[in-house]
Image (tube, rainbow, N blue to C red):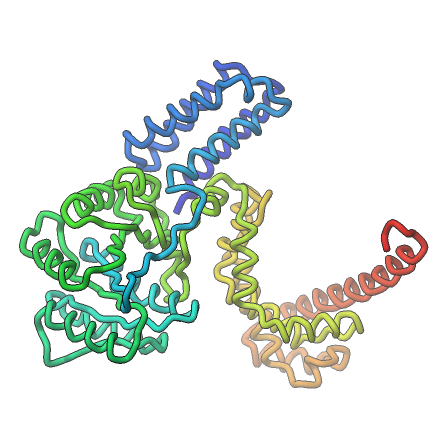
Amino acid sequence: MFDSLSDKLQGVFRNLRGHGSLTEADVEVALRDIRLALLEADVHFKVVKQFLERVRVRATGQDVLRSLTPAQAVIRVVRDEMVELLGGAEAKRLETSARLPSVVLMTGLQGSGKTTTTAKLGRWLAKAGHHPLLVSTDVNRPAAREQLRTLGEKSALKVHHPAELGEPLAILRSALDEARAVGHEFVLVDTAGRLHVDDELMAELHELKALAEPSEILYVADAMTGQDAVRSAEEFQKRVGITGIVLTKLDGDARGGAALSAATVTGAPVKFAGVGEKVEEFESFQAERMVGRILGLGDVLGLIEKVEETVDREQAEAMVNRLRRSELTLDDYRQQLAQVKKMGSLDQVLGMIPGLGQAAKQVDTEAGEREMKRATAIIDSMTAQERREPSVINGSRRKRIARGSGTRVEDVNRLLRQFAQARKLMKQLGGGGKMMKRLAARMPQFR
């Protein structure tokens, strides 16, 4: 989403690092380039103006200009102000009601992704140990209620679907009754998509709000619609009163400036972000992490969380023990490929690693993902004995494996060479570990 903006801002920072010291004139040049980058990324012009004024005051202060590393100090100022622009460093939690259930109204324009986002939020709450009830009051869009029910079933979520009811208030009242009777903590309400100028539908939303007394009214903003999303969010805030924003389609290739403008323009914090099409590709929005990705500073905590979500702890411990005994097999290799795939696309994972910056964008991630699929197919075409001990794979076996996986013998040979090198490296690391233990025994400061 922010590739273009990220490239330009990182270019500004590279120029700053080229100066041993900075003058106010150097800072002004940098600010001009930052202003252009933000405007080209479709950030609202008023937001850009306010942002640059705050950066200018801090970046031209004596503490920065006299710093031993002035360029780094300016980068930190830009980073801090961008975090504030997106709502502050502290992650904004989902508010709850004093009495159950807590109702969350999902609002926004038609086509912004409200139904899918409702299912994503439901899965996110379920993973946190809650028991949400999902319901759609969208009687205007054909099959909207069926869509939510289908998404809910795929994620093992309870969806209230009274087929005999066709009026939004009646559907919501029925859902609230079920939630109270069963003990659901949250009711997530997928409302009909509407233009903010549609007075009839806005009146319906007011009625739903009065009945539900929601703890949250979330505005679902399509990050690819540009300034329209910002204008609509501002109007929804005036007419209904939104409490938070959910950004969808952050994995798209639009300029993304609207995402940077929405919180400032509406005064409502960004609370969640959809980072992919899958139901599980949804996360609590944290400004520091997003800014780290935009500025090429990485997102270590996000990477750790992805690893924790995808890696099976018992399998990992068993593999560590096998590595210590130099017993790495092709089954282990395949297991690692599968876990990397679960973490998401390679470009997303690489973008979270600090220091890669532009280097991560130069990696042919599509080729890397194709290579992982090819390696998985080759390993799947082997027998259990061949995966356990590749040394038994002779010429005829290689031909059979290549035919079975739809690859070439050269591909099989390359995979086996890579695996042999990895195995050799693991053995060397095992020996190095013993050497470090012997060294530590002789040196008290390492004990």
